[in-house]
Amino acid sequence: MHTLHRLINSVAMASLFTALSACAQTPAAPAAKANIVVLATGGTIAGAGASAANSATYQAAKVPVEKLIAGVPELADLANVRGAQVFQIASESFTNEKLVTLGKRVAALAKDPGVDGIVITHGTDTLEETSFFLTLVVRTDKPIVVVGSMRPGTAMSADGTLNLYDAVAVAADKSSRGKGALIVMNDDILSGRDAGKRINIKTNAFSSQWGALGSVVEGKTYWFRAPVKRHTMASEFDIEKIDTLPMVAIVYGSGEMGTFAAEAAGKAGAKAIIHAGTGNGSVPNYGVDTLKALRAQGVHIIRSARVQDGFVLRNSEQPDDKYDWVVAHDLNPQKAKILAALALTKTRDTKELQRIFWEY
Ligand code: DAS
Image (cartoon, rainbow, N blue to C red; front, side, top):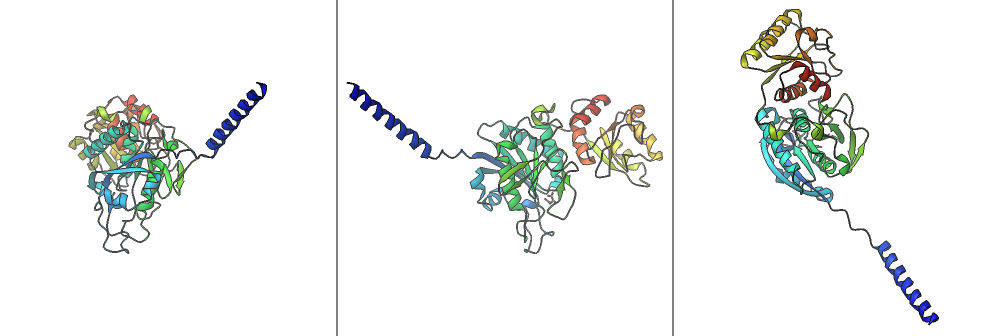
């Protein structure tokens, strides 16, 4: 009997060992690929020029999303990718209505359990406004990546194909979750909040004064910091509760700027004026009374700066407390315009507006 037990045990042990070693040798099933949707809106990334030498003279918004995706077959190595054409326009023609439409489309996709990330192909001219808008209004921690290009696909050394590949790689990577809307351009992963187009003719056009969040190389993401300002899931703004945006004007500061631009903005019905002041958001002495009068009519005055870097300090150059004005902190005029429009859908109170500019 004892011998029989030992035989049964050794057979059992041998089959257990065989099973375990088979498991050890069987490669783990490859992780399921992320499902990524590319929403196309136009721009240079969809542009076409007459010849390969035309890197700057071309027509934007010509190539449909299916062709953009087909032009980068390597996308299939990264994710399951499908496309949809939302608009086909140059982004300087984006309107508030188009921003809201795009925001609602992104939010709807983000709620779809079959979608893991969203890439938006976009013209570079107002890409920074759209990326900030999306980070403020779409309640999701799924990656939202906005991408464009500085050269059309028909040009020598076109940057659109690699930018699109990089954007899909970032959107498909779980480590991109929870970082707000992102801009991917020229191998950089940038914050949708504070990155913008700072050069208008080179492929390294986009940057932020606070640096990149990370980099993407050969389809792999490398992170070095994360945003600290409120966004997406932590935002008080929700695109599902927004249908229109109030008019906000930007008045560009310069010597001898006169008061006509601010006056015209007030007459046109602007609910806020972003003063893109010289220096630290300075206002010329002959312009103060005009802005004070506009404030008295209910128009909010928000001091930003035409100077690219730094941030506007409250009560510097102007007594904001006394005049009941707001400062845009580090946001450039075009970003301040987006935040002001959204803030005004919630409040007309100056202190609340200033809180929003500190927090987002
Ligand atoms: N006109 C520019 C735009 O559509 C082209 C571009 O750079 O994308 O924003």
